Image (cartoon, rainbow, N blue to C red; front, side, top):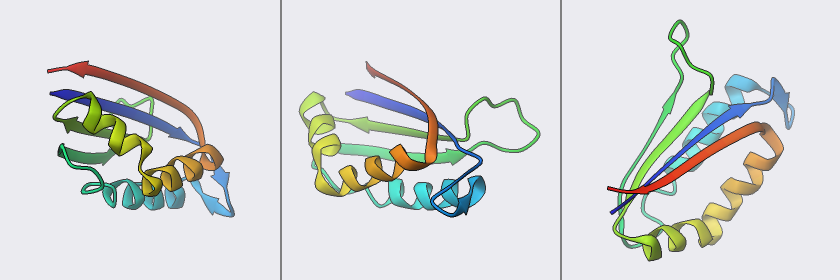
Length: 100
């Protein structure tokens, strides 16, 4: 199984929206990718809680049966739309993939 974790830090404003608005939009978009590819076992998102120690705004934790399933997810046209939105509203991104 492959675990795919991604964190994003958002711009203060972009695309005519505030950081909070873009985070909420992006979270909804990511959650819409839950069933895009066979082999997706788990997909959850979380928004950093004010008052807790966080250096990024939003996290994605997802599990895939194997690299082929992760690749199918990442290459899916609906996921490409999410990535395009991220390019416009995100200032930093970190990712780690590992075998569980």
